[in-house]
Each structure stands twice: as C-alpha cells, then as structure tokens.
Length: 329
Image 1 (cartoon, rainbow, N blue to C red):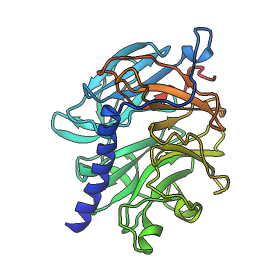
Image 2: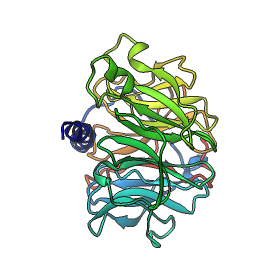
Image 3: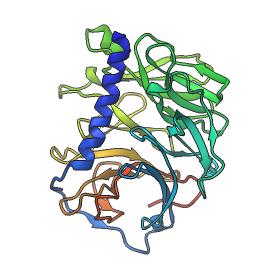
C-alpha cells in the first residue's frame, strides 16, 4: 500500500503540473518572432491532447483543428504517431476501461485496445518502437511503474524490472529504449518517486546501461526530469525540469538549461522528425489563457511562436509531429 501511495503521489504531481499549466498567466521576458505563411513548418500536422474537453486533435498548418476522439479522463493521455503516420497511440479511459489504445490518425476511427486493463491505474506515457512493431509504455502490474514493450494485450514484456519505479520511455532505435528512473537517487535516501537518472535498455530487456544522473551533474536545485524528447539524429536529449527545458548529450555531457525563464513554464518538448536544429514546446503568453506552441533553436535562442490561440478552451498538451510530412524549420 505504501508503494502504491508513493506512485500515486508522482501522478498527482504531474496532474498538478497540468493544472498549473491551465491556470498560469505569466509574462514572457524574451522577444518572440512569429512564423510566417511561407515557413515550411506550416505544412505540418501535429497530434495533441486538449485538456478542457479531454479530446485528441490533429492540428494542420498550426491553424486548423480537427477532433479525433474524446476520452473519459485525460491527465496523461500522451498521443503519439506511429512511425508510418497512419495511427495514433494514446492512454485514456474509453467506456470505463483505462488502457493504451490506437486509432486511425486521419479520422479517429478503428479504435483498438493495446494493453490489458490490469495494472492500468498508473498507465501512461508511451512511445512507438522505431520500426512500428512495438509500443513501449509505462505500466504498473506489480506495485510500481515499469517500462513494458507491448505487441498486444496478451504479449507484454517488462524490460526495466526494478523495485523502484521507471517512467518516460523513448525509443532511440530498432533495439534501444531509454527511460527515467528513481533507482539511483532512492539508494541515497531520496523518495521512491524521485527520478533523476536516465538508462537505456534493449527491447528484449538486455544490456541495461546507466547514461547519466542529473543530481550528480549540477549544483542547482534538481527536480524530476520529465517529458523527454530525443533529436532525430539521436544525439540531443531534451527534457523538462523545474519548469525549464534542459538539453544533454546522450553520453551525459553538456547539460544546459535552454530557457532559464524563471516565471514562465515551458512544457512537453518535441522535435520534428527531420530537423535536429529546433526544439518545439508548449507555453503561455500574457494575453491569452491558451497554451500555444513555440520553438527555440538547439542552443535555446531564436524563439518563435507558431500557434496563436487565445481562448481558454485551447490547451495544447503533449504535442507531436506527424512523422511522414515535411516539417523542418
């Protein structure tokens, strides 16, 4: 029971972050360069979760929204395209069943359940395997969150397998998945749900390798590393910590705070599938209650705003580019 309560606390912290995103109105301190209609990014398609109506949308040209499906809850829905762009996977509750599902990426139809409802209390945050054959998902089947590879509800494999919990899987190649874990900091007396180390593991569970531990690399007050993204060339790992965006090389070198915005939250970093030079994310401005899409270059400079929604019903969470369309900027 204690372990379950600890797991619940980390989910509550993420849900609280989302609540903070919905209510926060802060001033952006840096100048923003709007994108123009000739920008090739405006030919892109993005899937995202809109928290006010608990629905997954696709966004075309950073302007045109189309609703695909509505879920009964949606705190960690995390929609993400399959590598071929034909389907979107997400976690959520449909007709009372909380699990991981896929839908047709164009119309939201052909709903398929991927994971067993068992252990779904803390299910969420997933990624497709790069060849499209597996989905890696965070799931609680034994009292703590673990990383599983999933083919269908009867074929799941625990590949992280540790008494402390593991979260935020990312697929790097046909054989390698990275994830955040609390196992190292917990050994030093930290709470079980503190996650400050990144490991990689093969999709069969072999070759577990520690890549870096944030709490050993900086004198700053270290929070939990969450919402990671990896550049298309596999070299730059970006994540959110203390409401800022950080980058680090996958060999553990060159940790950098990219935003240093103090009062402004930058959330849910993501890359286009063919561009290593810009990092996209969601954030607020001072005028509207919406959560819009912005980007910066790989050094944290040249900030651009890409969407300009101004209503309280547009809260863009967990955005991801469709991989098969040109979206480099």
